[in-house]
Image (cartoon, rainbow, N blue to C red; front, top):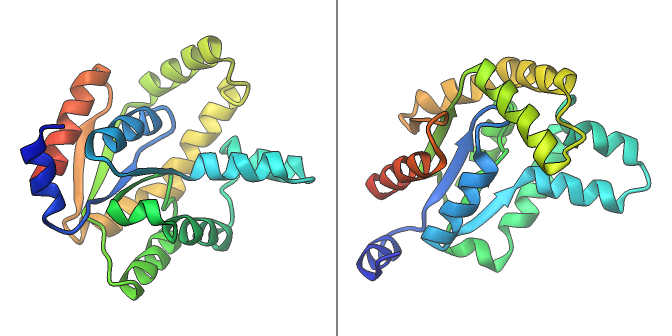
Length: 201
């Protein structure tokens, strides 16, 4: 990142970015790139849940959360996010990948941030059509050995996203926080659009 741009970003409040998008829209891939570019923490709630699954004796329960067929309870997610945000590396800024996924989570998250004198800088919606997502996830399953990316699970995860997560976008849109990015572009084009969005925030 150019020094001048980094200094400009560092002279104001650290950026707090939320990624919202269906499974397979590139949240993880782009989140890692953005975090590296802007020197902020990439907070993946999917990764947090996978760590819980690997540490838990109740593998079946957490597997249903990590596969996306059942959303993890709000109180669990809020607890995980609050614990993660309390760590020192988040003070320089963060990008939230996979949270909030429900309206109640978004409202609780706002309450947490307000309590700590903080706020979201920008919500970035990664927009992708369903057919393109299904194709992308099936290809990913083959190349990366992702057993959770079965056609049945993909369809169910898209349904959960449409029903439970879309209201989150309406909530943030009412506060003029949402910018849409076409996630079906090539990876570099998506990244370039995201960088422009953050630089303008």
